[in-house]
Length: 200
Image (cartoon, rainbow, N blue to C red; front, side, top):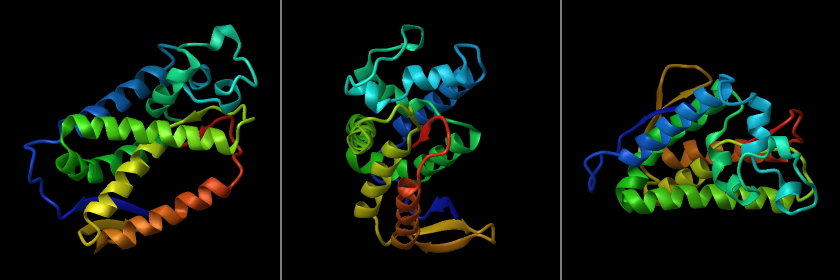
């Protein structure tokens, strides 16, 4: 396991990564509201805002009391619902480290569209792979994976400061770090879920 801390890659086109910061703020706020039980029970939130492939493809129908948004809109809302603090913090840390430079390369508005589009694509790919699944998919990993892929294409030789197996920070290339991350994601994807929701 590795944790990215910082990259040696200053911004060149924009003054500040306002969309990246905004997305992180919205994710944290959504987590606090939904997981606190103020808005709804966390499991009900996952059912109402997560992507359920069987419901999306009209193979099953969600009970009316759990419906919070139209099923097509869950392709966006699932990005902002997480299964726990570690799930949220992991996704937001990767977005913080890598999102700013992708936003710098694309501009604010195009970065937002790209981020949300990656999330929609990931949810559709998941749903097509398991069309009969009744487990709600939640989390920003699909969108963040798109950002990581873009970063790797744009800056493969940039050096990153990372924690590897909780040892002192180490400086390695983006290609090695993100290649390792991709491999671990493939392992997770091939492991059958054991929880009541599929975490992304």
